[in-house]
Structures are given as C-alpha cells and as structure tokens.
Length: 98
Image (tube, rainbow, N blue to C red; front, side, top):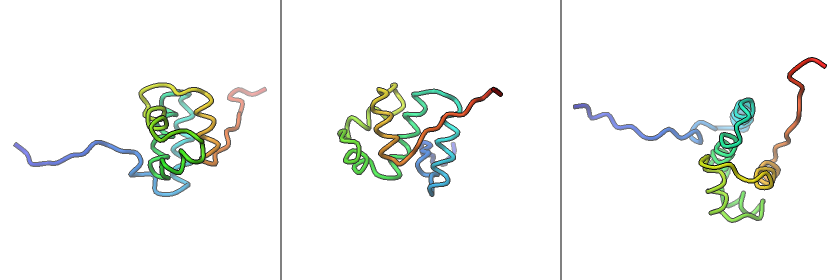
C-alpha cells in the first residue's frame, strides 16, 4: 500500500494574477454553462476575498457561497452583481460572419 497523500483539486490555487483570472473566466464563458460560470466566479471570489465581494454586492457571504458553489444556477441578477463587483465587463462577439 502506498503512502501517497492527495488533496482535492482547487482551481483557486492556480489563479496567481489578474491575467490568470481573466483567461480562466474567458475559457469558462466559451462553454456557455451557467453552473460552470458560477463555480468559476466562486473560485475567483476565494482568491480575491468572499467578504469583500459580499460587501461590494450587498449579498451575504452565505448566499454567495451557495450561489457560487457550482452546484446550482444562481439568478441572473446575482451573476451580474458579482461580475460587476469583480470589475469584469462582458461583451458580445458574433461567432458567425455577418
């Protein structure tokens, strides 16, 4: 039997700077999965501080932890509050030539 110790993967451990965070969020948005988006925002919130995000959004920390767990789809209102409070701007780009 091996004595190898492992720990669960946590993306927040790999988001070392704003460039990493921006690239991560861009990649997540490519899939269009709102649950994955919520989880990614939760990872970013862990890096930047959930308490500050709660203050900036006016939502409770408990509510944010639940909404950004990736286990459910948060409301559009919550997603937009979090995205704005984190200083992100979403843009739309056509995927097919016009």
